[in-house]
Amino acid sequence: GMFDSFGAVPACIFHEPDSKIYKLYYAGYQQLKDARFCTFGGLATSRDGVTFEKFLRVPICDRTHKNSLFRVIHAVLPDTHNFQHGYLGGGSYFVKGQTKTLPVYNIQYIELCNGWPQDDTERTIIDVYPPEHRVGRPTILRENDYYKMWYCYSQENTFNIGYAQSPHPDCNFIRQDNIISFEYKSEMKAYPAVVKFNGELYMFYNIAYGMALINDPKILVAKLKPGDVYE
Image (tube, rainbow, N blue to C red):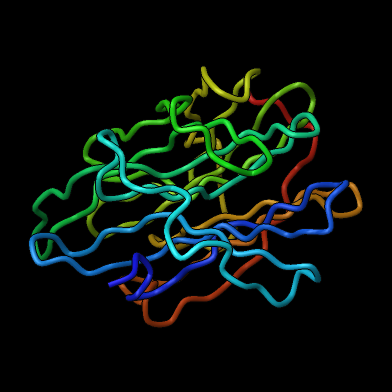
């Protein structure tokens, strides 16, 4: 009966520079009688960044009136000593698809204090474009005075990776999905994670053909161009 009794999926790790604690945000899944599932955000901690233990047995991102079925932090961006920017996927319903119901959620901003979400700061920053039913799993970094975000968006039988940017961390993100191109072509591209290493940007992402995304995913790495501002 716990919020993660049907599975737990890691979302992101956050480590404060002055802290010895690593914080792992994850999605906990439950099956429901009147919906396929619900998922809320949990927190686990570690001192070595390898072995984690649950910080609480209950979600740190529990259901709200706005997000009654889905509410999980997927990205954390440090700001000041005790303050961080958080980016979560949130939503409250499913829509009917051809073969199953489809979860509807979008990307929302939330302030964090010492890694803890401040519920009254939540607001939508990237919404779905019909016929999409969801946009989520953001990864974000700051570069050249811009906040750059990559994320996953999908229709019933396709997954794609999108891009948005803003001069602000909490608003005015403009979707520019059409600027992204991949050498490895597939209708199923999802779950980007962008990191900077030795001055270069790299994106790790899942790719496969058809519905094999779930059963036989592959992980590829794409090299991005640092310093670009898309206009």
